[in-house]
Length: 59
Image (tube, rainbow, N blue to C red):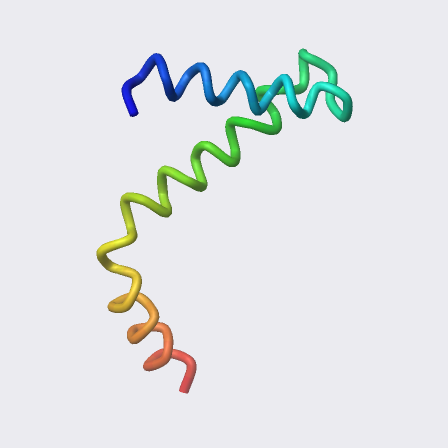
């Protein structure tokens, strides 16, 4: 998916949410989910290591 496709998809989601949110509120909704998704993608390769480290520290 290229940048234009991603942008179009994001705005289509914003339009879908239009009934629940005002257009001025789109950024408050979309930006946090975009950041969370980006973090999910970046940290995907380290998830198991992080979970193991968490288990060690929970004891």
